[in-house]
Length: 259
Length: 324
Image 1 (spheres, helix red, strand yellow):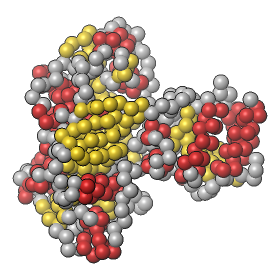
Image 2: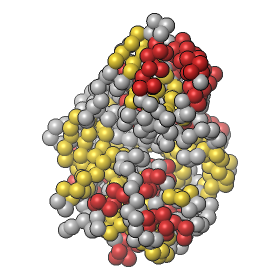
Image 3: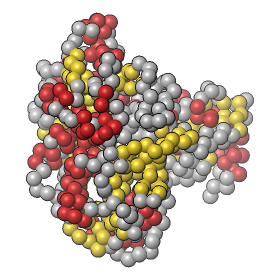
Image 4: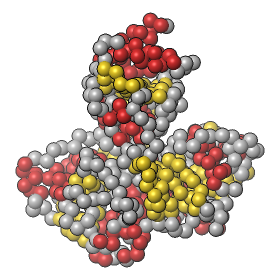
């Protein structure tokens, strides 16, 4: 059971984010970290490989050269190896060109299962994994809240508007997992030390056989034209509860005259 | 090149279109001159009336997709329609579980980019600009698709108000799913599970009472449910307590959950992470109860109560009960 987990390394969400005023690309000047949403896919991949009694987890990520800190975190959790695609021409890639790059890298691994988060924490377009599945010629099941493997079939509880569906799908397949699907392990000290010597292959766009015009800002068929501060609502009255706060709430609701 | 034809991917339950579908049809009328819909399912003939009433002149009927997930067959049928020469200028797709699957599949299949999480659309000349809330909705980015048409937009619920056009039933034309989908279309739904909830639906209720980590335990979510019931509203939740397994996902309000715009939103023990604010900032009135006076939720609250939900909620529930 070989699993590829797509991981994104993102600016720390706790740090204030901004867009470059001229390119409108996300500013990534701080150190990138593993997107917390992806830690669930990594954990799920590790558990499924363990349950299958063999196989390994390979991480695939696209990020500027030298950005390996998030990958090392996932390697420390237990992934066996990582592929990092870095290339200056990838700057400004949209979801579809990202999917094209990851698809080429994943084809080199020939996994039984590809896992990804339902969406990244920073860009949250939420379409990349399905675009990836189409390019890989695989079926996909998105929004998995429970995943199990039996033989060459993956069984998923897929979130729906009304509840969830039991979905079954032959492997190889792409599955996107929701946050909370499993409890991601913390890397142990041993894991952190071991991660330092795990294989981390760095590839460029031409290594993958893609042309520079297919990816990055050149390949992206979309552009941000303008960024403005949202018309924000302002804070209203603030009351410190001294045992009578509920009365403020009752008055507030009454003056709205709800039927 | 002017913007003429708009397609709306129409989601429905039996023969009732989803509310987001009607919102998108309404918006499509103000963008283009011809509005058409793509629908699937076993009851599509029953959609001619309701989709027509909101402005669709034609329904492309993908038909019954059996136990398949909609993403692959519906996207493939749309791609086939586009290739056959009847391409629209833009396609609007609801930002739902299946809508996102359809958009991703369609994008990769047609090699067309897609803009997601759209919270507004404007026509400027011969271009359509989409608006996206970024950084927790504190900023709005305007974007456009620069390549060939159709432009694909995935639009969040409640971005537009649905208004009937008063037009007649739509014509129904078959739109075949190509037969050679092979491995792509092998995911099968074995069973649907509906998580029962009582009272009004979360995204339609006039009052939403939502709980977060500050409740301290899953058991204390009962206070949120009781208050919601007293106010004839629906109970919602932050992602934190859904992830923690306290309540089902169907309760989640936020970026990954539902967008709600009730008359009153009562946030109980919710700190107000950007992921949550995106889903409820459009509420007409917001009441927040939180122990931490610096909690970000207070920046959007019309009435902020700095206090312990374990004291304020029981007192509030008693007071409302006393008033009958």
